[in-house]
Amino acid sequence: QVQLVESGGGLVQPGESLTLSCAASGPLADYGAIGWFRQAPWTEREGVSCISLNDGSTLYKESVKDRFTITRDNAKNTVVLQMNNLKPEDTATYYCAPAFDDSCAWYLSPGSYKYLELWGQGTLVTVSG
Image (tube, rainbow, N blue to C red; front, side, top):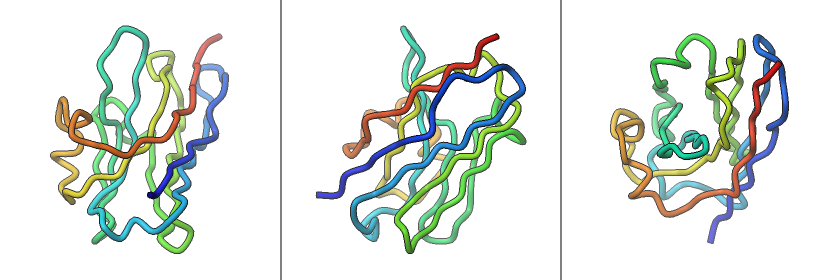
């Protein structure tokens, strides 16, 4: 079974940047999309960004649009989330997860995480200062 490992989290000040990586141990050919969720304490997990594994189209949560960029490297089975101009409200544990459905609109819809089975351990992003 494919395993996911997220990395790149850390403590930064507002306005700074971080690059998160999600490495899959095997090909994600069975999936249609992959992206990032985040979960702050006492809140529900929410979709942040998604990229189609079919055509590379992307979609972002409105609050991160123009600040975050998601890219994929199919050959390396890696997905990267570049986060710029970070804000305190971006503080959360970030998780990557693939979906069989290739619809990023669905991926970012509330509660979609409940239907995803494959998750990494998460990487903590703290924006403070």
